[in-house]
Image (cartoon, rainbow, N blue to C red):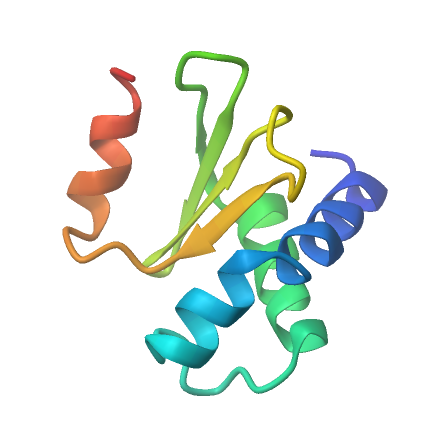
Length: 96
């Protein structure tokens, strides 16, 4: 993914529900305290992670226990979280 696009994606997702739900409420990212830190983490996963393309125009990326799902139909651009099922969750996205 182009570097500029990845940065924009990180900024967009980090300002949506994912920060509040997965960083603040669920504590899935203990070292992340700000939306800016979350955006950098998302950027890294998108730039350097493994990619799959589920249905409906979405893309998903996996790196170090984190999944980022890009969804152009979502006003937030997608989401990022640590799935309970880990890599199995990511693998299942291939068929969706």
